[in-house]
Image (cartoon, rainbow, N blue to C red; front, side, top):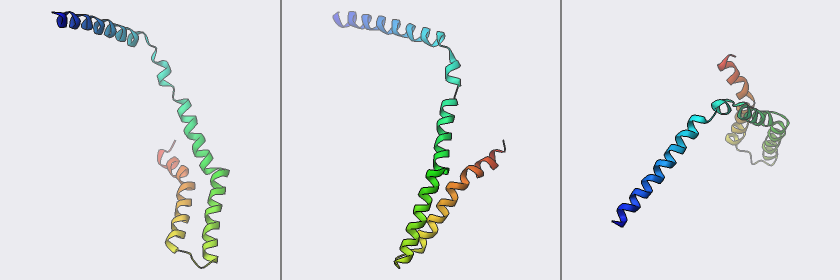
Length: 103
């Protein structure tokens, strides 16, 4: 009998919690969820940082490392070509995506 009373008490709690959840969903304003300007500006800042002065400095350091390895006679051509192709992809990605989306 005690178990039955406990189950009835919990079902009442779940009923009240369910009603509160439904009321919260019905009364919430959806306009705040439709604005993605914060996310868009955050992602644009990442792109600007990578393709801006920071990206240029990192790319220059990578090319310097390739030159240093060439100077010491330890250069691996696969490593050098992959660095050059990687730099081209990083700096050409934004232009490539703009060409595909055609905005």
